[in-house]
Length: 354
Ligand SMILES: Nc1nc2c(ncn2[C@@H]2O[C@H](COP(=O)(O)OP(=O)(O)OP(=O)(O)O)[C@@H](O)[C@H]2O)c(=O)[nH]1
Ligand SMILES: [Mg+2]
Image 1 (cartoon, rainbow, N blue to C red):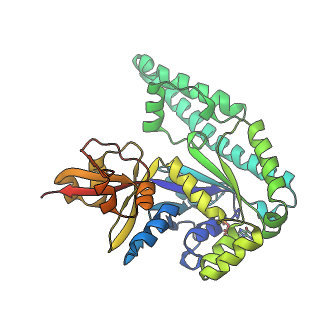
Image 2: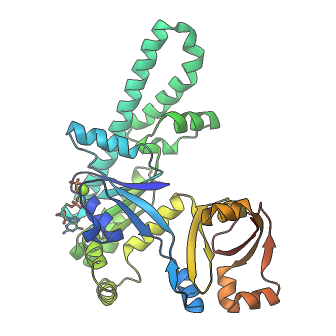
């Protein structure tokens, strides 16, 4: 599971990567992978309750990428290679270098256009290849028919400058796309409008409103958020007090990157469960819909192998009750079997035997 940052040259992709890990950890060669900690209020509440030696948040991988609109062949190949297996794309807009919102929207349009062109290019090449193939082997025609139809359908959308994510696709088409293609315009996305500190302080709401209008006008329902990536990257390298100062100056409850990470986490289809104890309080990520055995496996393969049962209580309930013992004595600690579907916020204690 991986997210990557895609954007035009100098839009602030590397700076944004630095906002997750601190700038000092970034080489800026368009190949850094940031391990971003997933901010979770419940983890800090559990920390207060347990005062453990260690707390470990859940993390996700976010990869910095070379610019989308590069004309350097080597960079282009690297870009395609690296974007092949992305589950989620963060689309970065260099609003900090724009003089007004109109220019920001223009960059948004350009980025969307580049994604469209790249996908159209793939479709054109594939259709040409199929045509040559069918000339040689006309018998293959029935086999290729659904693919040709699907590609032409997508092509129509793209030619109208619309993302085919709006298309109604049947299961076969979805499977075909999943196994053979990596279209940018079909990937789960979130836009980051990377604006200057000044704009972030003074014009945040106005820019947000205009971006929302623009997104609606092109029929793009992907989430977006505004961020001052450079400042957020700068404060990663300094201490906690200055972060508080930054939030106060900008009138924020938390840095924008927190919202971004949580949203990407959600787009990746991940949820969090916790393990608690005096030695460590830890958040783990698993896929929505995963069972108690998978949760056990996320912790250690032995726990999955020797799985007997899981003791489960919601974090919010535990925080209210104050301890696992109280939860147990009040009958709130549930015993769940192998096939229990773990919920976001569950505290899980695996009983096992190997
Ligand atoms: N003022 C300001 N400058 C920024 C911001 N984001 C990026 N920059 C500056 O813009 C320049 C390019 O930023 P990068 O983060 O390297 O951009 P990039 O998208 O990674 O660039 P490429 O990888 O070359 O495409 C750097 O000098 C940054 O300091 C921002 O939010 N505000
Ligand atoms: Mg870069």
